[in-house]
Image (cartoon, rainbow over all chains, first blue to last red; front, side):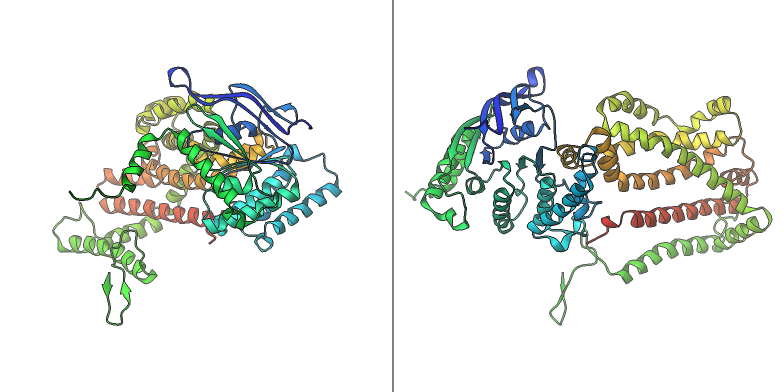
Length: 281
Length: 271
């Protein structure tokens, strides 16, 4: 087996100093293979977003090692594109200008021949079509629905052919119907672009449907609890969500999240609410 | 909500954050402007108050016309606009880059923000003796007073405008390979521009409120100076005229800024 695309070794992240220090990530070990789709789930405060941001270079790790293609991550870079939950598009640029934003940066300029520049602008068109937005090229972000905005954000992240795509609850703010469409779209992108995707979500169904593996994290301190292999064929279809394997895995993961969340009082409250009223004596 | 006979329902006029029609809006705006004017006219015409204390609108208008024909009102307006725009412009020239640096880099913020916060509470009027001592009584001293009155507020407001740029916009650029300077140029400045223009509009209004103070310093022309001189001669009608003219110029500049805002940032107004 070749070396993993992403290697995390004893990654530790501490927020704050002294007595107020909080261990957000404790000794995280995780390997992600090239062209693998891995989803991260867990109760809030388990550090799944922090972990993603450490890989993206947006947070500095306190200890341990993060390797992408065998090279240590020392900061953000265009080899690891990131899609955020919202507010990441530039409202003063139209859709096409947003998608081509990275072309303006020195890091992606200079080394291109005119043929490459042409190919790149063809790629922007192709991505726009892939996202089903050919008519929106000249629109501005605040003229688009939330789902369309996220499609633009994904296209923008894909423009420079990143090897790794990091997605931080990208569909968290969308309604259920739009989210289903986005799921199939991102799987299509995944097959087409052959990227390695690390995807954070709080939605277990989303995590199973998209991921080849689901990494369950637990809070206080943030750590990897269980890694589940998803027993579904590579080519996912919406009706797989109703298969016994899918439902069994979903039940298992949800139960484990509840166990690790440490929200005992909340569970007690739920139980009390669900208990049928005591019969009158 | 009230029901009509045809079955349609109307929201009440005073709905919280409710909408009113265009015609209703302008009718109310007109009432808001005309009623005080009528009251003013009625009080002064009734003879309840002597003319020295409150001249009527007609008197003030006549005085303004006289000022225009005999006393070179336009020159007073010109020099005052020059002083305000120069002092305010000088503030903007320094406050925008400085505010950008404070809003972008935490060390710059730590270094400069507490100091600026401290100075901005100092009354601009109290600086007059110092300004006269340091700069003299030339034109630059009046500009300096307006600068002192606007600069420190403006720096803090620009810094706040820059800090309000969503973190996701910055981080998206970082993960596309943007360097520090590129983030400032291509993201922070572009994203904060509309808010900064609004800050400039608001501080322009404040600059006008410092005009009379600035023209306390050995001036011999200008709207503020004319108001002060009129006070010495108890020309209440001229004081009224001066104040109203300053208000009208302010209103005009404010509308110009709003028009510029719509023109410069059309993407804000798209739906």
